[in-house]
Length: 102
Image (cartoon, rainbow, N blue to C red; front, side):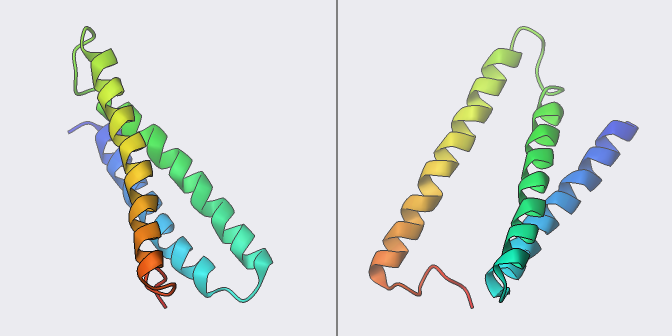
């Protein structure tokens, strides 16, 4: 296993943890300044995570197939960006407090 893959795994773990805990902290914060500070860290972690995933995926395919791989990766990411808010909207319609975890 190369050092790149080991570091990539650790970076992904840190970023996913920051995404999870950052959103919980932002939701429980009593100050808008804290929310902005935490969400800024979450956005940076999301950017690092997306770059790390893309670089890791680039090692999965041959040079002739890399375009198709990234096309599928972008399609999956875009679909997830559509499905999540749609489910949240349906839950909100069922009850305004359902999609909010407290």
